[in-house]
Amino acid sequence: MKLERYPGNPILAPIPEHEWESRTVFNCGVAQLGDVVVLIYRAQGAANDVSRLGFAVSTDGFHFGRLDRPVFEPGHETETKGVEDPRLTKIGDDFHMLYTAWSPDAIQVAMATTRDFFTWRRHGIVLPGPDNKDAAIFPEKVGGRYVLFHRIPPAIWLAYSDDLIHWGDYRKIMDPRPGNWDDLKIGAGGPPLRTDQGWLVIYHGVSTDKVYRLGVALLDLEDPARVLNWPGDCVLQPEEPWEIEGDVPNVVFTCGTAEVGDRYFVYYGGADKVIAVATAKKADLVRFAARG
Ligand code: BMA
Image (tube, rainbow, N blue to C red; front, side):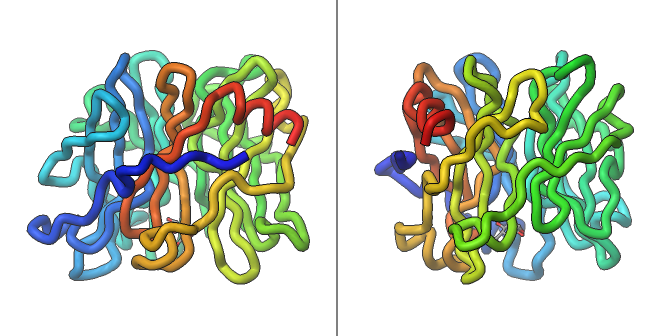
């Protein structure tokens, strides 16, 4: 089972005339408002490595219009080196964005909330470093508590909260698999997708030779610390020229998936330089995650 690339990929690329996104346009969080898909994407200019976040919007999930300026930029001493890899979850009326706050001292998870993607309320660091990232909040409470994925190298962990601000009860759920394509480190993609078989996780795995691929697993709906099934094969690996060569070679990296009709639309960064989408029939991907 492999995700199917949209033939028009990549769907978003750097724009030389916009300094802040002139070098890279890549890993993006995904939000859905009815038929509209919003991407909050990571971008870098030629001047330095600092990442800012841009805004793109589409009615079909393939063709995106975008703003000419960032909608979220470093604004605190914990993120002077950049705001990276946003993941979005709608809870009540608010979209909750977890992102990597990068400073000379630490890599940490920060949160900001919004209703319109232009005005943001900052909540600061929610998961302290020295090295924690790849965090995404589940779309609903589980067992009366909020849950999120996060990554303390090299594994995927959960954390729990009553108020979305204070997170604790860290539990490791998935470790890199020796000898496999995900043997060096792993991290969750976007928020998990609820299915009747369990929580579907799409995650990235890095191999010892530094190739980033995507895989899936299925977690128990009532106790997501329980992995129900974890197929050995990846569902996407760098093959296209713009996945193999870019700012960082051999990378496919996802921060979010949209549900469009009977398909999942997985948005991903190619070689840390462009944005692409690959899709799968929901029933096929869930069947693979459950039995593959
Ligand atoms: C990870 C993150 C991602 C990036 C990947 C490949 O550590 O920085 O944003 O896509 O490395 O460079």
